[in-house]
Image (cartoon, rainbow, N blue to C red; front, side, top):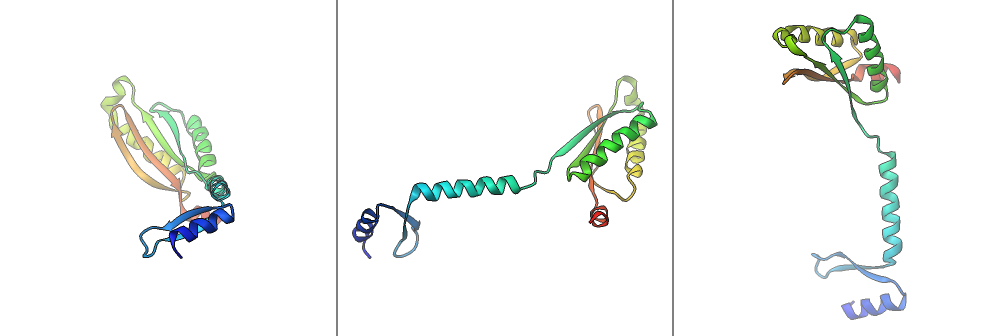
Length: 148
């Protein structure tokens, strides 16, 4: 049908003529209510966004002189984040002369990772940057399968 006929038909139906595929020969058009179409499209986008699970990286800051009990408290909080589906980034801060003993931080990082046993997978290995050592962990597939 010609362009004029299509426009006439859309006007008769009191709807809009929307070009679907401009590259086709001849171009493909559709007669629809543009306002209703846009509204439904935005509603669907909101529904999809609502259903999508946002994955966040939760950060736990730890000093090098942390006690065992405080470390257990942090680990408990980390487990809560992991069970909720988030990744956890541990940041070990060096203060003052602690920078002379970088190995202490790496040992502490290993101790933290070992405390989780098979529950977690190390996403980012311990890295030293500036005055802090950081590493990221996430829940392992093994732990997810065990809970299901």
